[in-house]
Length: 351
Image (cartoon, rainbow, N blue to C red; front, side, top):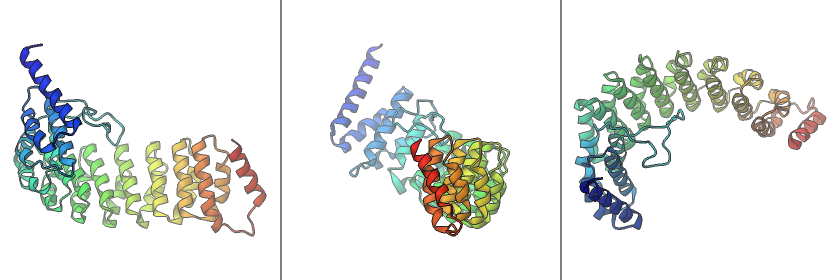
């Protein structure tokens, strides 16, 4: 280890100790800004991460750090996703790889609206990596003034920018994002279509249902899953039929999401399909089917839910008990087999 390396590591350690010890955050900002120019990608990412933490505090002011953070957005040097935070996983459960540019985007969230003009300029004219991270930062800031800029790049190359722009439009949750996201459901890249379906679910507008109904038949299972989730978030009755079809999907994760979504919509047209799903080979699908039946509260599902009390999976049995407590009020009490009900519940609690 060279002397310069030793000095730099000692300085970094000192900064970390100062931050943990609670030394005034405003005093630490210049030192972390200087560290953004370190030769090590890990040190650059850590500096951005520490600025993010300082900015998230009530007394944090990162306006001084904004130029350096903006300049770092194009840095794609890979670092571990768990470097700065415990939640280093993406929505699909995979380990998320980070970078100094990504950590800078996270810190820029705390700069807030004053970062909008330069971020939108980078989104239009920066490097591919910087543009993707600028879109990410704009989504984190959640300001509707960025919608037009994001919509303008959602069909431009490369796909990494389109993907982040779709995600950002969903984060902003403005109805003006529906049209560009609907168009990008036809994107040739599956990752872009996934984020577009997710974004439409976040915006929760019924006008997106026709496009999402087609997306639940997409060639990519991840797109189908996000589309099913989005239909559940929108809660429009017109989404029930495509979701019933999705309960026959080859991918269990899609079937699980479809069962959940039908329950969210609470439409009795989905009862028969959810009853069939109580015999699905995947326990997670059966659990969501029981939950969905409980949400709909249709007494015709009682017998099937009683049978589900004998399911081999304890989570399915637990959900079935909850669902029975909800649907029993709608059941025909004149034909209700109270002995069967009591015996089934007794067996379920005994397991």
